[in-house]
Length: 229
Ligand code: ZN
Image 1: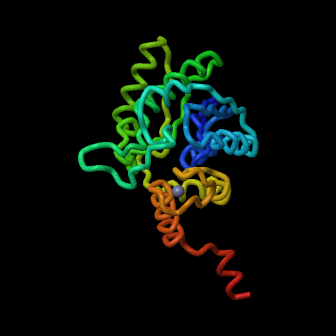
Image 2: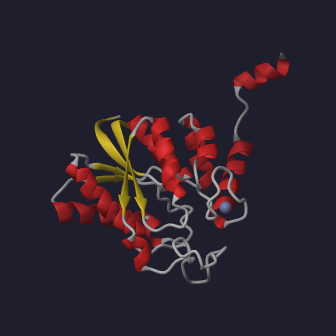
């Protein structure tokens, strides 16, 4: 455990919620930062606030609508239908160009002001859906850039980088928050919390991961005891 505070970039989705509880285990003090960037489902910010309250961590929201206005994509443009799959040789139109770049830059300045050098983000290269700014190479490069930009010693932590969705569920379970992550988070591209709409790409990835994890989960001794009682 680090005897230092950390800042989690927190959207209220499955991945960043798992990271929030991971951070609670790894750092003595945890702060959560959410963004209003012009996303269609702004209620995710309120869900994030509720989860942060349950987790007992400080929660702040940054208004950064510029991120949504700069590019044209299906997460911020309500009139654009979402790609259900990654198009051949390109990124899906749910990609918000520069999002993680802006989030990390803003989070680093925010953290620096508060004497925090550990940043936590839920990006994953394993299930990265073609988003270039979820890859490990980008995160490492950004870490160097932030340190050079502010003459600082930031450390970007990516606990999910090499986990697939089933392993992310396993981590949530190990942290004792599987039910909270399952019912309180919003991952669905159609804005439905918990198990979601069931058919958008985010819901499919999430459900397939949960099913794989639950199928692989060994019997617990308490369940065995119930069976013989
Ligand atoms: Zn959905």
